[in-house]
View 1 (cartoon, rainbow, N blue to C red):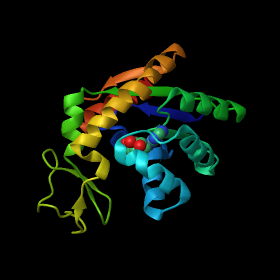
View 2 (cartoon, rainbow, N blue to C red; view 1 turned 90 degrees about the vertical axis):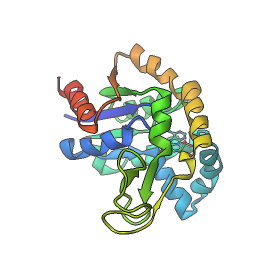
View 3 (cartoon, rainbow, N blue to C red; view 1 turned 90 degrees about the horizontal axis):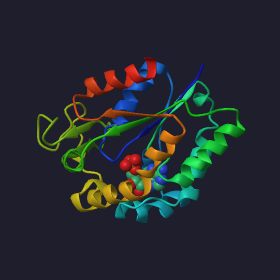
Length: 216
Ligand code: AMP
């Protein structure tokens, strides 16, 4: 039995947070194109250099680039028992490519979970987000502040705001989501794979609702 899962939702909906909780429960990897692209940018690889300008504008990176990243990633042996796609697919072309890629390997998508949160809440969540430069732990200026301003509670390294979490870029990312990614809700609904979960609530409440869908 495998569990091939897509988490769908706008930036800040909690896809990454929920994916991390599912890793432990099901022993399957989180595959985040955003994380992979950010490391490519940091390492200065050709893909990273190409992706960077789009990311800084809150636009999507070209389909061919992310599709290739996913094609390679899904060949790694750790995804045979399943995977949690977080932030991919984000366009109909990506969803089509994923479908073909999986079918040719005799695999398929089991569930697509859409996390819904309204735009004002998303903006609040994302523009307050902080990350530790040392250990990568996440914080929030209002909802989960560090004990000392700008400093990680665990490793004392400096906290930073993701460049694309600044308000103006986040507004652009929300527009991009509406235009290019929201059509995937109908796309997967038509395939009978979509389930929606209210993304407002505590991390635990949302995780419980997600698990109820997966195991119910
Ligand atoms: P995320 O961390 O998922 O919010 O992704 C950060 C940024 O990476 C996005 O705003 C896009 O510029 C880019 N990105 C991540 N995943 C994709 C994707 N599937 N297709 C195109 N661009 C992506």
